[in-house]
Length: 388
Image (cartoon, rainbow, N blue to C red; front, top):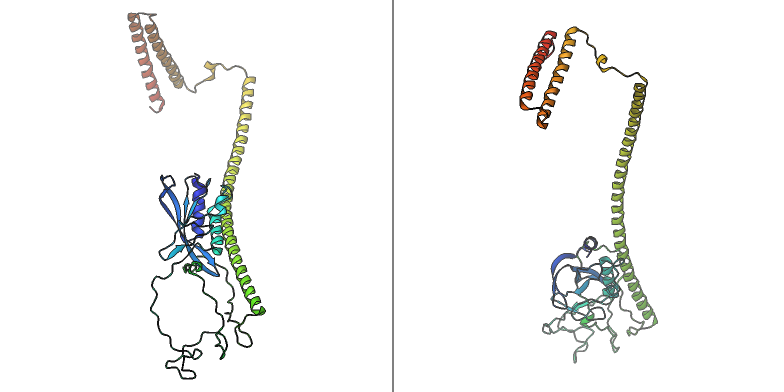
């Protein structure tokens, strides 16, 4: 499983389709094994016959995502019933060519949901359950254009109902117009309007409400003009649905491109900062190199000057300005030599070159001499006015 790719796809999908929620629940496989998987559950907006409905779905991401396609289901509510088709079985499982041809590098959750929206817009996966209880028949009052037997021309006992807009009553002794038959319950999509502002759609100018066409004689017969108008209306509705689908797909792709552009802009800013820091370090290194080269040339000059001069006598190199300072210098040198002599006497004793009696006798004499030299240096420093 690729956690980074999975989190990226889930974040983009939930950010665009606000009706989906992330859940972590157990999923029972076909072999009975249970796995804790991530799922997206909620509703997606589907445009059916010009109206937008919320279709409840559940998308399970396998532990091998994105190498393998998700498992998708339609989850109808209590007042819905699954409409079995070539894309949805009786259990609600979704079968789409997009899932069958799933490729890890080209397929993602946004593309899957867009294919669902397009497919369900043409073949709704659910429909509203028919009402089990029917209200009792209510006697309707007689209408002026529906005479009761034996009451022709009489005034009806109840006031008439108002006529529907665009309806024209038939003339006397003329057949009633043929009204369209209502579609069966399986073809009526569930009425679940989406939340306001959740899914932006392009706005169109309001269309005038068509009225039932009638012939010049009022007989309700259908002629070629009526068929042409009906075909134009159907084609217009089909084109509008296609335009909505293309708009939603283009909007999703535009959002993805905008997010990628923002990520690239942030990466460019980070790279600019890194390049600026490297340039500063490069300039600092160049200055240090120039400084080291100058010091190296100075050392070469000093070495060449010292090699050209005559050897220096160490004893004559240090001279004092007063006899008191010379006495301090001599006492210090003699005291340091005495300290070295005591050290080498100890090494000789350790190696067995001299015996203990000789060592003690010589160390006693050297220690007494060292004490006198230190006392002389202290007295000379006090006389010279030196610190300590």
